[in-house]
Length: 92
Image (cartoon, rainbow, N blue to C red; front, side, top):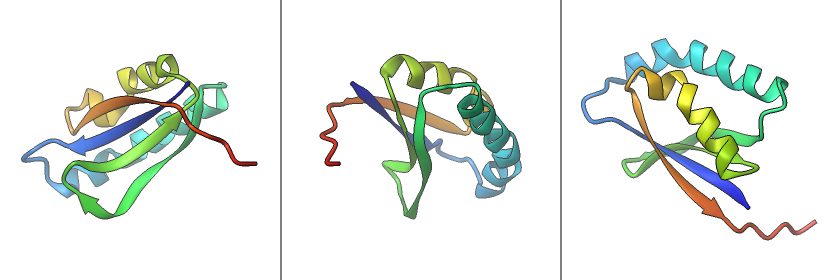
């Protein structure tokens, strides 16, 4: 079963802090994927939603947990992850 991670920016975190941490986050997700991590897709929403500013899709909950455990957005206290197991129907 796949897993979706919704990231909510923590209250009081300024966008400039997110942008300053983004290069570390990008290097992390690129390395995670290159090392065979179960990351299928990720990215921000076009219109920021207070309930979820961005999301990632992972091959399993275990891979999602492994990812968020070391993601700079989480370890630096900028975003709060919410993990949801997803019974996706693949159409093709």
